Structure formats: C-alpha cells, structure tokens
Image (cartoon, rainbow, N blue to C red):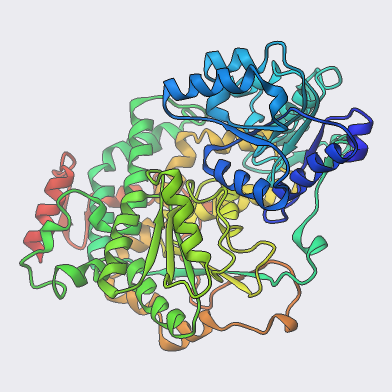
Length: 584
C-alpha cells in the first residue's frame, strides 16, 4: 500500500471478508504519518460501521486525531460541518458516511478547495454503478490517493469492474464496451471471450491486492455449509397451494405468452408484477404461515396444534427443525447466529426464543447505533449469557464481528449469494478458534430450492469469469416472465401430489440426523478452507427446473385432490385464512 502511494497509483484492497481490511487501513495511514506525510484523510463508510471504525482507531492508533462527521440531526450536522471542515488542520482523519457526503452542503465542503491526502471508501463496491449518485459525488472529491476496500470486488458483472476502475483511473479506463461484450450467456450455452478474461486479470493485477483466508490465516478453522431440507407443515402446504390457485389464471396466461416467445426480457406488464408479488408470498409461506394476516388467529380455538404458543413451532417446518437443532446445540455449548431476510419472521423467531427461555440479542434495520454496539459487545464478552443472536441478513451483514459464535443458521437465502457470504463472514473471520458450521434451511420441493439454485449459479459464474458475467447478471437481476414462471412452478407437482404425512416422513429430522448435523470434527483433522456439503437429509427431488414446461404443471391447478377451485381465483388472504379455520 505504501508502494502504491509512492507511485501515485489508486488501488483496491480486496481481501476476503474477515481478513482485517479496517486494521490494515489504519496501519497504512499511521505509517504515512510516521513518514511525515500528514493528513487530512477522508474515510467514507456505511453508517452501520462508523462506530466500529472509531473504536478501531482508538484501539490501534489512539494518537491519531480522528473526528466523526455525521449526524442524523440537520442542525447538528451543519454545526459539525462548519467546525470540522473549516479547521481541517486540527485532524488527521475525518470519518463520515455515504449518506452524509450526498447532502448538498457537505458535498460542496468536501469536494471544494480541499485536497485530501487519502480518500478511503469502505465497502468500495458502493461505486460499482458509475451512474449512481454516490459515484458521481465521490468522483468530485479531490485527493492524492484513493483506496477502495471491498471483500467482494465484484458481486455481479464486469460492468462493475469497469465502474470501479474508471473511478480509480478515469484517464485509462474510458471505454466500457469491452467489459460488456466479453461474455454472452443464453439458455443453451455460456460463451466466454477468454482473451478478454486474461486481459481483465492482467488489468486488475497492478491495482488490486486480494488475499483469501486460506492463503493468509493458516490456522483459521474451516467453514462447513450444510443444506437442511425442511418439510412444509400441514398449514404451510395449505397456504402454498391456495396461493398458487389464487393466481392460477395469471400463471396460465403468462405461461402462454412466454411459450409464444414474448415477455422473456424486461416485462413491466401487470401480470409480471403480480408474478413477482406471488413469488414473495410463496417465500413468506416457506418461512411461516403466520406472516399472513389472519393466519395466526385462524388456528385459535381449533383442535389443530397444541395451543397458540406451541403453534409457532408446529405450523412451520423450519421452526420445527430449528427447535430440535437448538436444543442439541445448546447442550453441546455452541452459540448461534440466526439470519433471515424478513424482519417479521425475526419477530416470530423472537417470540419462539422467548417461549423456550433462550437468552438472545437482536439486530435489524430498526436497531440504532448505540443499541447495535451494546448488543455486539454483550454477546462477545467472556461468559456472555446470550446463546443466540438473531439479525436481518442485510442489516447484520456489515460491520458485525461475532467470532464468539461458531454456528450460523440461514433461515432463508438471498437472491444475491454474496449477501449470504457476508452473513457467514460475521463468524468465520480472523480470531475464530472453532469450526464454523452454517446450516442453510430450505423448504423442500418448493420455489425456495430454485432461489438457492439461482444464487449458486450466480456464484459459479462469479468464479468462472472473475467475479461475474455482465450478460448473465443483467438477465438474473431483471428476471423475465419465463424465469419467474420457472421459479414459481418448481416443485408444483410435489406440493399438489404428495400428502403432508409423506412430506414430513421424507424430510423429518431424526435423532441420528441431528447428531450428524451438529457433529464437529477436530480442527487439526481438517484443512483450513470452506467446505460445502449437502445434508444426507436431502433426497432426490422429482421436479427439475431445467426441464420446466410452462404449461404442463400449471394446467393441473384447477383441480386437485378431487376439489374444484376454479371459482376461487379472487380469494383474498383473509379468505384463505378463513378457509383454513373451517377445515381445521
């Protein structure tokens, strides 16, 4: 990094998540000061990690004069701006946030007559879109050197690579065209311009330092990822079927259009938006039926289940598996971090943990900065009473270090695999002394399997083409009607043909299964590298997304199990809840 500074070359520190990019940056700025190269330096970070940065500066370089330039209060922000920016000579480092630099007054002050010694962008992939507001703002900030920090140099495509290189060296990377045309992916084959790939590797080499955990930290225990297939409960199967039936006309109509070759790209039609909404509803159903209004009330007073409290567990296959898994994990002395995309699902998990008497902390988008810091410190302190930490995947994916936990449970999966990777890295990072086990819960035979497949495909392409294919990522980020249909139709034949008892028998966690899942091998017997395995619980699935036919499974939506639902296409969520109550 000092070499790059001496040669006036902007750079990317792209070390894998958990390798201490924050500490390396602090050491770099301190080394500059030791050489007589004073600030001011500008460090721009996400709001969620600004407190962590302040703590690290105080811990590792307390003599460095660091000030935080951020406030949610407009008047206080203006006071800070005037007192700090107008007297920069008093400080070595100005620490601020991406949101702050977009404020007009702050933008003018930071990009005016000030020449910063070094500008640091934490989570530097924030500038991966060169047309975004934040990219345009930071390009106007003048500095001697730019340092981008990112554990995921490119999450999607080569356009992102060009955007970051263009920010670092706009005089060199003028034309985006070669980065956009290097790859072409269609339904039948992936075409790669391998010569362009070699050039991309070659171009990155002078500007980026990237190291992996297995290369740097030889004693870091491995990460073991296991897919745990969860059966749908009786109530989940009912809601899943009824949601499909409620939208069957839209599915059939969209399937006919897709079969004619239309609506395969960017479809903004009303039907397409309804399909997207249905996809979200099915994802909720896979987590817990109580996420729907009226669903929880519909079981009160019925003979189904064993009471309102216990019904939190018995109405969701995922919570049932979680319940059985947590008992064994706690008995063995493990500590757990539980992630979900849905804050309302976290509410249900919150209720469940309280009912079982587990001590836990929680972090989501509504957690303020002070609470966030206190929860993390309390969880990590020696002899902490907390057994679990529950958090939303996006809110907890950055700036959270939980090396004291050795188990990660992903209750659902993100479309972007890098988001899940960031979640796993909260525990699997330098300082971890134990093997980290990651359990990815997937509702068996549902569209959730397709979500995971799609994310894995994206991660595979990410590796194949050095962090992504532009053509494929654009298709994946903008799902056309055909792919939405493929996702929704995945597992339809299983959901409608199998009984609830058959499904539970197939995917029920036995005591032997639980023992296998929590089995921890001695770190000395394993290589220090992430390991992925598929749980022995995962049986062969009858549905194959690659062989999906738009019309074949959808025509069976009208009648199943001898009942005609053709007249129920206008049923509301409340109607479905009422119907469940009548059938109980």
